[in-house]
Length: 507
Image: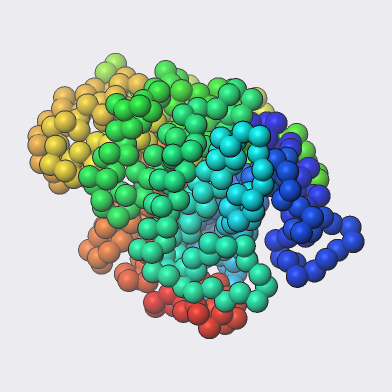
């Protein structure tokens, strides 16, 4: 996938800077859309430009983690930049706040625009091999679905744009159910033409398994359990059952063993360029997450983990009577040296005894500080998540007894007792199993940008009683307004400029 990164950035500097925001202008220094979209090379570069959106500030280079990790009960911010911290504690005052809202909205629709360009133009290009054309179109459909999925999780009722935009467009706002329907359509069509796997030099492109994984996520958010079961079975027992858990849990969070057997879809990051996040040819293809989430003394420390996560890990010992090793690789916390003999903590870091920090994706295994250029890939979906999702679906469909084995597979990797041995009180009780599964997902997936959608799917944001329970472990939820804060406000400038947009209820 490193080859894809390099090709993408060079292409962007040549073409798409003139296409995203100035469609009605013809610069003498840029190729126009009339001149472009003629050859297979154009089509391949066009789809590669979609990948480059992962490296933008509003998406997976930086601010998406604030939306999905810090807004959830797993994380929070005490940044001295008050407005930034307020956007992790439901104090939304300026809906146009760039870092908290507007840049993610912009980059989401910028990514969708690039998908739409491919989908509108590539069908008209002659290919020597039609399968190559189908794969390019399928990738664009997959990514359009991916970006709409996260937009729907964050804002819900949003414009549904399916053609290349023009500056005069005033797109219609659609209900989240319509957004979900389009995501489903795109993913099913993408699945048909994506390969079951890619060659080694193309690792990082979505395959059929990635499409099914996002279909499962989509169905689960709608509580369509039967459909989710079918999608997940493709990955676990069906034609796409090629995945397995890595023996070393930490291999999922470093650059040492990327694109491994557990990876269903991961974002490919690199450190080969030290530029910014614009459209120039030296633009970075890196992650900033480590820099913003690192403990004080080695990073900006604008985001950190709630201490209740540490306590959750310590509720149960493994088969040998020791702590769950996932704690060591998930969080930094003051007792790290005492608990695991981990001398990482002996560096010049600054924290209090009641603080914890996200460790996944950090580069402490070879350096003692972070910067804006982390090359560690981000595992957006991995098999550990898939197994726990399947257990959840089976439980919802009344097959609680059958669900145990999939939780046990995840627990066995880190030498934990089977669920039945550790928690015999659950039995076949649906509610008790679900409550335990909520903890199992934290222990396995904390800090991996799934918690916000989990809370929404479980209905834990739908009632005051449920929110009050969350507030006991995350005081920021004392600010949460039921019926309002389960979704963010749309940037006000977009509402003001588009008569077809209405601000989300309560804002």
